[in-house]
Length: 307
View 1: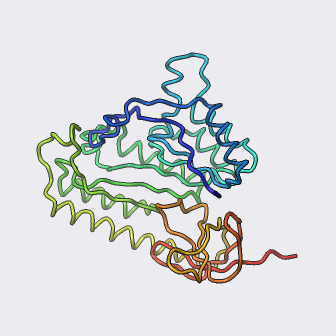
View 2: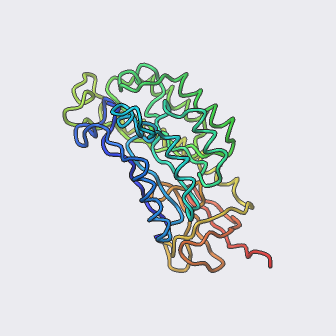
View 3: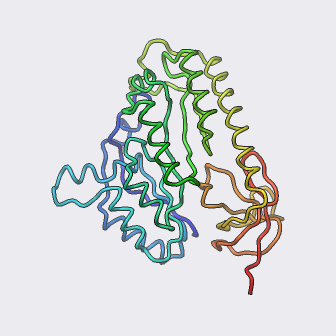
């Protein structure tokens, strides 16, 4: 139990045209700040080193409570401040931040507190303004680019993970090429890509100009090829570096290796660090010298601390 997921809300506020979650989970229901902090303290007391904060959109946290009561203190920034005070937690990771809610104050907090891993999980979905509008996303390409610039200026070593949807109804070849070029230029650390699939009772599912499966597949493969090359190059840069790794146990590939993660790798969605030399227990934070790299994983050896 070296890591734990901490859910801060149910349902969601936003209504993207491709998403069925509001129909399934309903409107945003945030937990009180004290309730969340109490659970975080219990988890820390149980030996949890990494807290992974999850919700449909972290940046909307507390909106519903503030709307109901002027006395409500719940907000993303206040929650971050409170969680940073919990003893025993080494890493705090935020998953799923919509770019329109990432403020300079939030970036500043993540930058200056060592407990927060410098990891932005920010689903952008597309970059062409017409497609974004059709998806009912509330940001433009220009606003998204400004957020990315702000993060990289303030936290140059920040990891940015995002995801895109290809084949949304009406997406033209030109609009897709704009997206592909954007991914090539931005060189994101992690990219997930999904082929659009119509969800029942969603606006997207009722739209004209549905894209055929063959076109979706070609666009998906084009994005993944570009991103695999970017990922390979980024991982090569780690060779020779010594990084902090949270040990998670034996490798899923072979019991001859230990497996862990750097703060730049989220569990279950990113790659891992395979440790081929040295001993450690589950939950240990150790220094690992990276000796080799692959497309998604890193390989290294534990560096013994000097006496």
